[in-house]
Image (cartoon, one colour):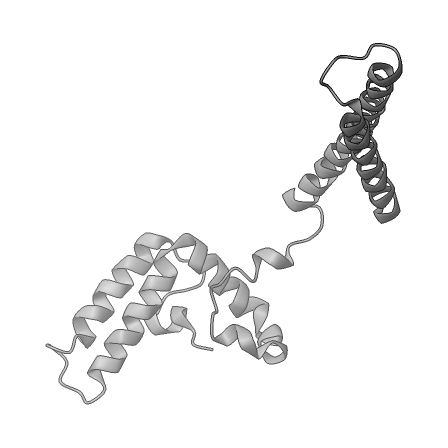
Length: 174
């Protein structure tokens, strides 16, 4: 792994101003227009890459992490060399972070969702039973000319059976 601090000639605790000044000094001496060596372009690109990483606070923090701790992990997880500054570090945070808090609040929402679902299922079953009962009432007691309540009874019974079946499936899934 390249040590960008050694490339720029600064310490790991240097401030951004010191890093910027070191970059300018190195860039002046190693610029391809001024420095006529065979590897001037590669040196300048390396200096530029080091400055781009160290000037950004997030990239510098991740680079310091990799430099201090991540060397052992790089041997085990070789895929991270392709994307060294990706979001892999975010997924390895400890449990007590905001992600855990979000999961705890989701449990409360799920509790209220279950209560709300149960109430809705019961209301829909009662609605279906009311439709069947009203159909029987129209069929036997209060008949209306030209209206066949049998279709309403069948539709209400199918609706009630579908709702009860959905509730049973929901209870089995947990």
